[in-house]
Image (tube, rainbow, N blue to C red; front, side, top):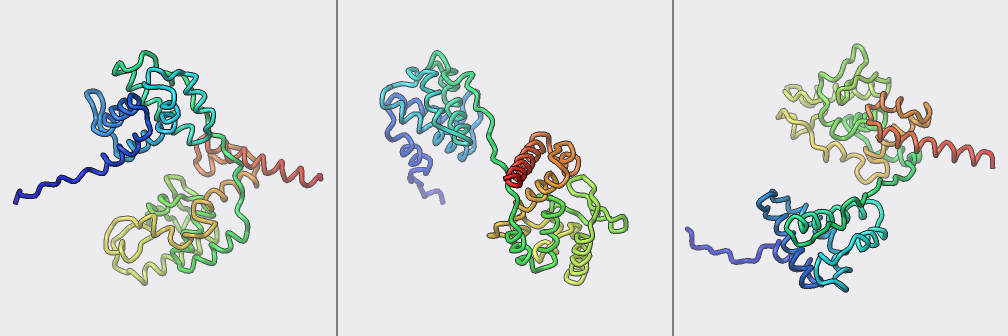
Length: 302
């Protein structure tokens, strides 16, 4: 009817006011202008998603709070100040906070608030990954026991034997199966069907035919919701059977690739060929396998 006037304060405004508390007035005003440009866009920038705006201001806030104790404006912050702050950070905290500060100071330089960008030429550094650890037999046995349906057992095998991701499992089509030649195509890569997976595939297909004989859905895995449609099953449904287990589908996938590296040697080229991994990921699995093999050798000689 056009008589309702919504005068409630937007949640973004309340959040922004809370995040700017404790900052020096000059720094707070500059941070607010930057945040509003991220949120609303500007002459040379498009508006960002609200989650991105939250990430950026939350990332910059710890440094801004520290600098507010001795500075009144962003132009007083030096390169040494930035380096001192990020030396206390590691991993994704370092990456996220430095990325947010870069965005802030790049905007400040572009708008003339500062003369020199103190974050320029500061490298984030590579993430230092820990050694991947294999799953314990008891963890795998627990997930196997939890997979009580034909669909769940097949899903478990696709992750644990063929290292398929959840999304790849969900997008498998009936045409990806070649029972006669014992081949299965996952993400465009044809793989041999081992005896276990073949048996589970046949069990599932028999169950599928008896449960939904008239379905037109061409996806390999379907359920009550998707049998009457043509779309794929959700990632949530695919992961349901082992949700809460130590050996999740993702951990089973990682464990399978690590097992390949331990069994056939830490050769990244072999891993890339078998699983279609990129160079960086294959190197990580090879490095973890090499470290585990060296640890085993050291313990054997002790």
